[in-house]
View 1 (tube, each protein chain N blue to C red):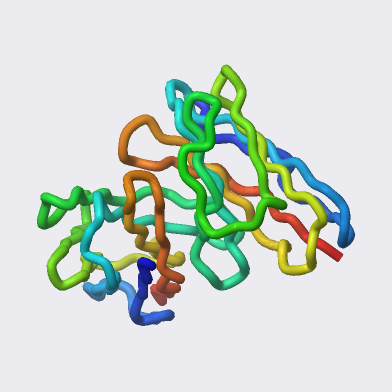
View 2: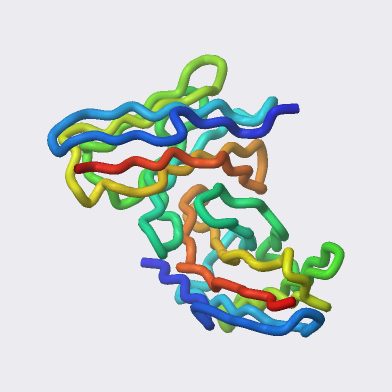
Length: 111
Length: 110
């Protein structure tokens, strides 16, 4: 069974810092990996989707990489802002239509 | 273009009761997935519907059932509610790879 782990569970940084969030998965037979943002008590907002054949995707200050063979993905956030404070979740798609989420990294960016 | 909508926003039930949650997908999306998110945890995949059929199912008991209508909207039904069913229930719609999530329904079982 696929297990998705996110480290660290929580992170607090000063505004302007560059930071990296980690996601690891146990079974490398995935279709894709998606990063989401979740604000307290709200639904999920898709940030980046990386297909299994891709190595990275970029959107604005966000860059996500995927190393399928080692079962790892990272989300890089450049020049962090207080508005980036949220929980960040990664999810892998497997068996065509099964999705497995990590427990998330709760990010706090201090002004 | 409206995104994914869910109703109700909040719901309080007692043990043993039954509940129905509703989801309207994003326009043009034919696939709907349901997730359960306990406090402090990531979402757990319940099942996915496509063309009114359950296409894939996660590790949830038969107390959890669903339905998809011809207009692609969907319902999640939970019977014989347990205290452990208290969670945020999320619906996501998709047409290809990217999933778009609704705001969720917060279910509290007393």
